[in-house]
Image (cartoon, rainbow, N blue to C red; front, side):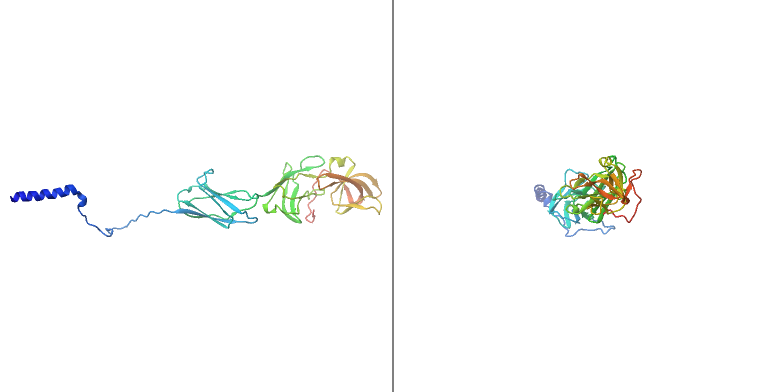
Length: 327
């Protein structure tokens, strides 16, 4: 009888375990982590961050109303990671998820597009990081440059002239000077802020025996100008008589040979003259005048013989004189 009693108890306990499962058995619970105090202690930290990029902006001249920023990564120039349109400010910030930039080479860049016809877009390359902050160098947003180009030639032979000085002035201030290359070509470039400036002038051939070429220009209709420069007398002028040039500035060119003659022009040094008649102490000849339309007009008159020299073409470059001013 006693044996059967224990038998039923054992059967009852096993039944509870079978139907309830091990989960019904409570285990010990610890409110804090148990350390074994062995050295070193090791901890693992998981961080998630973003990339913030600061772009200082400098506007030396005109300020466009808005700017668009396109961020490209890992050499992909067709699909921007981010496009932001914003007012023109001195500091622009953009934010990216971590891990989207290339970090091995400088193959990330930001394209900045000003919303104004006088500006062109520019690209700013930079090294990437996995996450954190990037501060780029200041970016200057400037207007599209202004270009003047052309060819320098001899008006007598139509051949190109190398080594001729070509200068750009605003009023009496020299902005830039270049020299024609072996093909007679020259090119001048100005910042876009000069687009609406008046009193711009090209002067070429200050170092030649001929009077310098002068032409007023402006960029109100175009940012790219072609100004071809012809120096010296034309073949048409040479066909009229022997060629002389004035040997000083402010030479009187009169309509009549006598004292009562009216001064038509004060000729600069180096002005070519085709002498057709010679009288006592005077020459009668023809000069060419460049008018505003760009054409050369011929005019005849009288001038003192002592104010001229015979023109020789063996060397058209005169000796340098720092005191000479062609303005």
